[in-house]
Length: 267
Image (tube, rainbow, N blue to C red):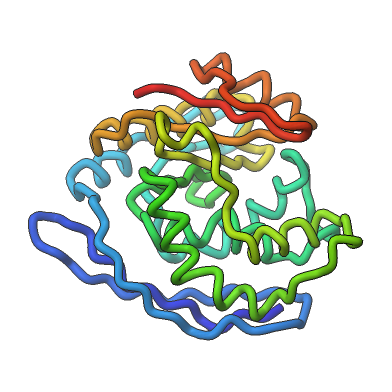
């Protein structure tokens, strides 16, 4: 699928509204369908001073060893130029943390789990970089119901044209994702007490160094600044590593299905 540029006007509230026009082109190799350009006017709640302070946080590790360059990890706020990497990371971690390349339409995970969040609420997207290259991200929304309503009005209609619904007989994962596009995001009983939700994905080179925990901490601090009461997230039961990780960070299970566990935390 080749996607035409998606344009969004984001107006962060920095004492005065500043309008920023974003033009993003996401290119895929599947060759089917086109997303038409769309302009979405949003009013964010970003505090520029706070956001810029994150850009200075350096998580350098290990120093130089035998002439090997130091690995410098940073957490910073999302920039529109990061969008293609968000799509790539979403795909390369899309099989319960493993690479889903070749098993799915290469853009569908990014269409569902990345792009709408950074367009709707860009000040809640942070990226992890290794020597300047994005290798992970955390993103989400402070209000799941408002986000779902926005997607229904602004995001899903064009995607529903690009991805025709498949019959229930098709039980492939891609078909299930397409059905989600047509049905909208499923609601969770956790939303009343924990209105925010998040998604986090990190490539292997950024794993095992507590960087995921730092991303979570950064995201939670932002939610606290916004006065959000709680946050939840969903984990597939087959992703046993993640299912064991969230309780160690202070999340607790609040809902469970045959395939997924919903974890939540009060803020």
